[in-house]
Length: 131
Image (cartoon, rainbow, N blue to C red):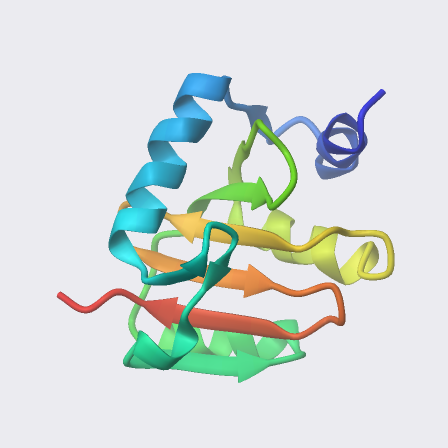
């Protein structure tokens, strides 16, 4: 079993494994919406609406302050070829429970164009695309 398959199992029944094609389409949308330094890191200096945190509760609060109610997201692990469609609450709970095991990842909401970049050290950046 791969790490991603382990992660999906941890996420539970509400997580849907996307095909490689679906993953590629969503990742292309993400990389066309947000500026990247490299293929696997967002250039946060160029994102105008953003927040840095280590606390999941601050992510939830920021989304409320931004009046964002859409919580169906795509979860990408930076070294995986497939992504998962899942509810944001489950994705955040997953990171809270497995912080020491989890690889760096992106949580992307394609309908609203917000992204959370999760770093191995537990730091998270959340940003909203300019409209």
